[in-house]
Image (cartoon, rainbow, N blue to C red; front, side):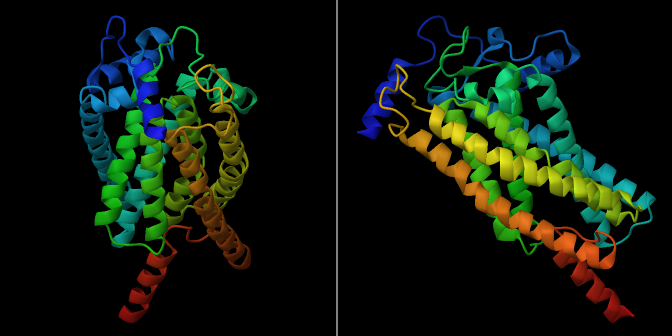
Length: 343
């Protein structure tokens, strides 16, 4: 059975058959990442390997506790950046509900810009990170053909980035559920749930490489979107239009072109006549099939959002500027109605 196969597979690849590795807590993982960014430690160093996979998931010290610690760090970061955004909004002369919307976009602009910069710094010289090297994208996990790396482990810097992204989506989901609902609430709710489960499943299966690539592809478009929103709220001329065009192009290239290619590689490379999986591409375990299903499930959401982007583009062509955006049209219309009533 699938359950029996999965259990025997985990038994064959249990972490710690030899000497147990020194597991790092959240602070130590963060310190290691800063060392990598400063150049004092090499990026993606196998010597810093940390446990991932089902065995690590069952150990609170390996997953749950660091995730909770990092989620608190992310919440504090968001609170600080949000306060900064509110201050910048008021300095720009903004008032009312638009201050909070500016602050929310400023948080996402800051987070995604930092996330992309750090991910690029860590993975820049990794061949599997770029499309030309995606033939090596699924070498971890069950295939585990990475030299010098134990099964179901990843480097400390990559584990920290993975937990930060997971923590960010946990905080984002909480904020989504507690904030005033936008008209795309259910699409965002579905996206956050699927993305969070996807991170968890890929972590459980040990396929960290594809998780890193999907994170990067997903986050590429967000800085342009939120730069356009912030500049639009602050009434900065020209820049919102330029940022919106960059947002549209980046979304189409990263999420509608490269992302499906990434899904295809995940399907064809997992269980491709390897020693641990001789049955070929259709002989996948439940967790691997779930990973591919979840990756595919995000595509309709991407297509829907691109349709909204095209609607804004059409409106921009007719009006002469990209006023509004794909996430806050309903709020803008509601605020305009309230202003008209006051007048």
